[in-house]
Image (cartoon, rainbow, N blue to C red; front, side, top):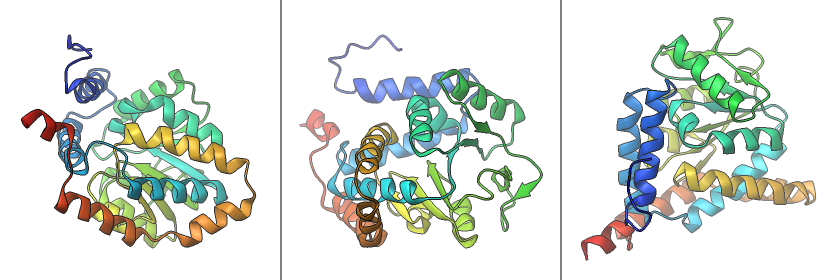
Length: 254
């Protein structure tokens, strides 16, 4: 961790940056992931750096969808693996879903590094992509998937997803739950449920919601899923960005 006091107004943000940098140094995160993280940071400023009501609505629906799934899978890329490994492992155990490594920039070494990192954080089942199964319509490295993982899944949870793969998964008839700080991205618009929030805030809340729903009648999850409208949530997120609010960045400037 960079030598920054916890009283520093950007302490939390700097801590996340350090986690991404550490991910690069450990071979888990691509150097390109630094750029993606910075872009997400900008959108986080715009939504107020807090979990907004529209994100909470999406988290409720996401928990319901994951619990109702017959074959859920959690897809993990380098940034997610660096930022929330413990939470990904915990969620996988809760819903009985394997974790599957899937990255854009081709690197067998990095795929192995992500897998070993997740196992070190307690994961029991971590799949890697193979040449035995491909997502139709994709040309990038992300088309390669595991035949017993993403390829056969009915619901794929993909924090920090690529838009083209999200669209391709939906064309395969799969439901996609994603976390994306940009409500205007292709991923956000193509997904079944989009949680517009920072992954480090959203995942712990999602785990809490899954645990709460597990003790409720299955009808509760069914109703939650049926009443959810992703376009409504995205519209609310865009309104938040356009109309503004007081983020910690604005407080500093003032």
